[in-house]
Length: 191
Image 1 (tube, rainbow, N blue to C red):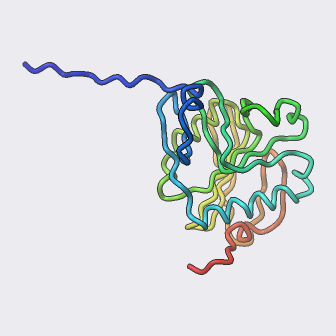
Image 2: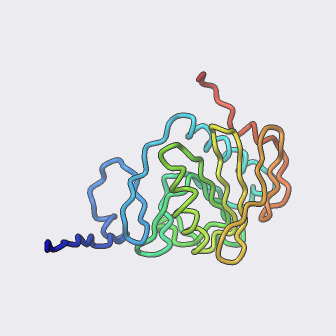
Image 3: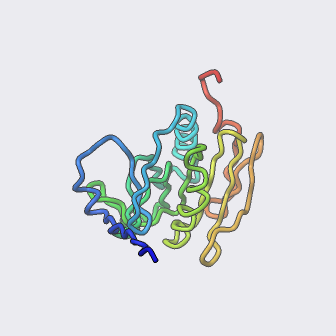
C-alpha cells in the first residue's frame, strides 16, 4: 500500500504579504490562502471609474467617502481583499486613517466582475464580506450591463435588485439613488 503524502501549505498573513517585494501584482488573502487578482481590462476600469464618479457626486453619498482599488481591506490578519470600490457612511469616517491599512468593513463594497474574477466575486469574496459585516454589496457586470444589489440579512446577502438600462439603483443602505444604470457602462472606446 502506497502512503499518501499530504502537502500542507502554511497560512500567509497580511504581515507576510507586506514583507514581500513589490511585484506589481494585486493579492488577496482568504483564510491565509493567497489569491492573485488578474489585472483588469480597460472596460472594467472605465465602469469602476463611472460608478466612483457617480457616487462621489451624488447628493446622498457626497459627505461619505468613496475609495477605489487598489486598496487593502484587512478584515483580519488572514482575510484581506481589494474591492473595486468602497463606500463609508459619514459617521464611520473617524474609524479610518489616511496612514494605516483599512481594517474597518465598508458600508458598501462594489465589484466590477470580469471573466477571471466572477466566480470569486460571487463566491468566497461575497461570503467574506457578509462574515465581516459589509452592509451592502453590488456586483456590476459589464457584459450584461446589469448591477445586482445585495443587502446583508443576518449572516448572508440577499439579492434585492437587478438593475439595467434606464433602471435606477434603489439601495437599502442609501435609498433611491436615481440616475440610469446604463451610464455606468458607457465607454469612449469602441468594442
